[in-house]
Amino acid sequence: MINQSFRLYKIQLLVLFAICLLGYLASAYNHHFKGMGIGLAVGFYCMWLLARKIEKITENAVKGEKKFLSLGMATRATAVILGAMLMNQLGHNLIMWTFATGVLVGYFLFIINLAYYSYNSAKEE
Image (cartoon, rainbow, N blue to C red; front, side):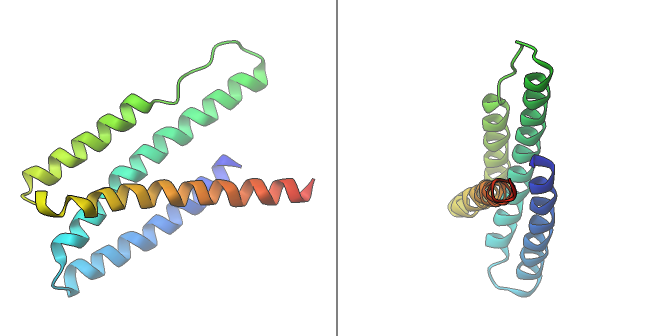
């Protein structure tokens, strides 16, 4: 289920990156679209880390091992902080909200995809 939802998440993010690129090239708000693109990239990295950790925890639970890993909240928070520092270095500190929106859109898409696939798998059973 996690692999299917992450595959759909990657496709959705590619569409959003294309929209950000078109907005960056054809709009007067190119800094806003750049911030959104950086936020989406950081959000994708965070979701990739989370999906990998969930997969490892699931494998450990199926094998019956008592060793559980954390979900890596510190590494994901560090990635977001580094992305915010990058936005600040690029001189876009006044439109930091676009970066935050990009990160949060990534999280919301992933949650919606997980809910969709878990609902469909529960419906099949």
